[in-house]
Amino acid sequence: MSIRPVTSISHARPTLEGAGVKLHRAFGFGDPDLADPFLLFDDFRNDRPEDFLRGFPWHPHRGIETITYVLSGTVEHGDSLGNTGQLGAGDVQWMTAGSGIMHQEMPKGDALGRMHGFQLWANLPRDLKMTDPRYQDIKSAEIPLIEEDDGTKVKVIIGDFWGKTGPVDGIAANPRYLDVFVPAGKKKVLPVDTYAKTFAYVFEGSGTFRDASKPMGVLLEKEYQDEEILMRDQTGNRSLVLFGTGDEVTVQAGEKGIRFLLVSGQPIQEPVAWHGPIVMNTQDELKQAMRELRTGTFIKKGAH
Image (cartoon, rainbow, N blue to C red):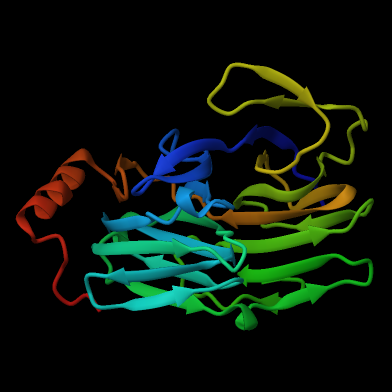
């Protein structure tokens, strides 16, 4: 067994999206190889309704899948094919945009005004770029929860883990998406697919991810999209951790425990031509998609 080394630790950066939603972006619109098959990860946790209520009005998607995981509040969604619904606390939606869809997502806070959640974009391989759109809406109660004697908790949203299987299926990247809590002071070793690209995103508490064979000194970290080199021992809120190769990830929880998403998927390793929420393989395909948006032929026959 081999522990995956940490290759970089960075912090999600504030940005504006949609009609003026304030969120934090851990990665996206940069190097598509960084987390292949994943393209973008947004943390839209916010406690001020005025910072998120304008939402994400009608916009197109093609060539990707979007994964929305809600922690608090609700997200109402609708699309050009007549699909509507609402995601509540703990719910997940996996949307396969495929050949194309017009979509909107409108967040609403909970009783305390909080809107907390995440959205991840996964690329589609060339042979599935123009597949029919589809949704998998998963309620919180359908997501398996593993509880260990030491207080560790793992929600298995997608994939197989410790004998449980998540309810989302039929996904091109064969991903695993876990919501992990490790209590204060505990150390856990978590198995991962040796060949999958893997990242962790910390959103509560703090802790360290390190190669257990290395000294317990501070980790050398390189800030993503920045030349600044930082020495830091702890990861905390909104920290993105990227790993090298190996079949295990180790985490040591800090004094308040640590909660993070652990996400992995098989790299697609294909050319990426990208403009906003449209991701194709070539510039010609991208230009064609933009022409179809202008001429009203973006939504393909046979979509359901």
